[in-house]
Length: 187
Image (cartoon, rainbow, N blue to C red):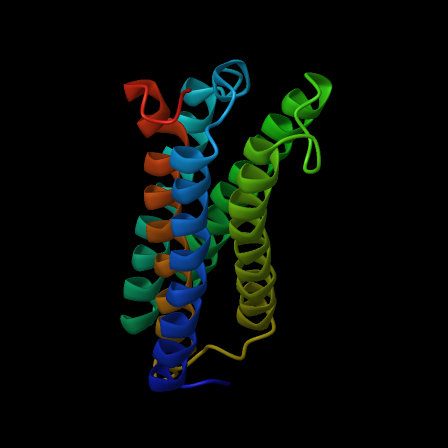
């Protein structure tokens, strides 16, 4: 399994990737302008609820890591399971947001807003999905007894990635959902 230093390098490269996507989104918003009726279709309330669940998953993962360090394997299973559930709920919420937007004819190729929105949030969703796969494999290994001694750095290594994905979403949520309400992105 990857060590913490390697994961920090991975996260560093991913940070540059997301920074470029965020800058691209903001650049397109200010220079090309987004159609106000498209931006207004975003559901900030529902996405806010799903965002809280994703952020909460960082805390449940910290609890899982703490329980593991103290040899409480049953508690580790519970907190890892809750982390996975919260991340999955976030992805379902994002999928519902996409379905709603597509129903309103806001598509990937239909407008500058659609392209920018789906690129930024879609790549983030992919990262959440990858994290959920890794966490699910880890939970399976816990059930199979591979984590009986609290000396592995696997959970803390994966936690670096998961916390990064959550922090990125907080920034994306602010840029995509909150800033438009200040009329910065409207023509």
